[in-house]
Image 1 (cartoon, rainbow, N blue to C red):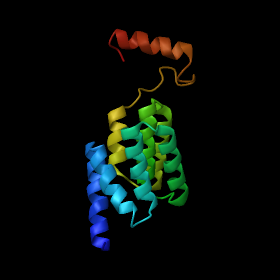
Image 2 (cartoon, helix red, strand yellow; image 1 turned 90 degrees about the vertical axis):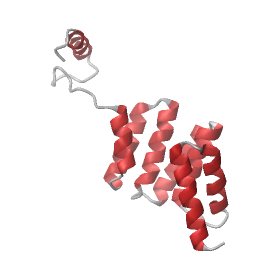
Image 3 (cartoon, rainbow, N blue to C red; image 1 turned 60 degrees about the vertical axis):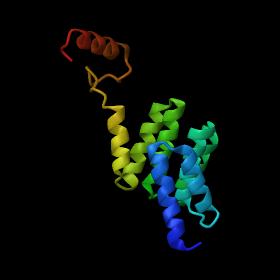
Image 4 (cartoon, rainbow, N blue to C red; image 1 turned 30 degrees about the vertical axis):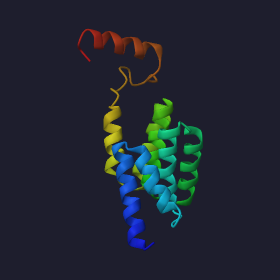
Length: 147
């Protein structure tokens, strides 16, 4: 198989994964993986494994290994963040997305962060966000429409 054909398989696989066609993505990426061994390919295969088979712990481990191999590729952080969101761990997902933006700019990470939304600042800035007074004041002010 020529390098151009492998590139086409990878492109089709990534595109299918981004659109949510996980089975198709696994087929394309699996065929490409037979001829090419790259961390980004493994990361997308891990994403397909997490979405298609529910093996999120193994997928997250693969993403972390890919990050160790290519720390400046933001795609690994994007996929790790998405996998963390699958498990409901929003904090780790946001951390992964932010690390990805530090590694290199990525519009998909920015879109994921926008989907998650921004938090309003703490009412009393000298107290921690999760302090009971801040939480109570935030709820009260939101309910009366001031915040």
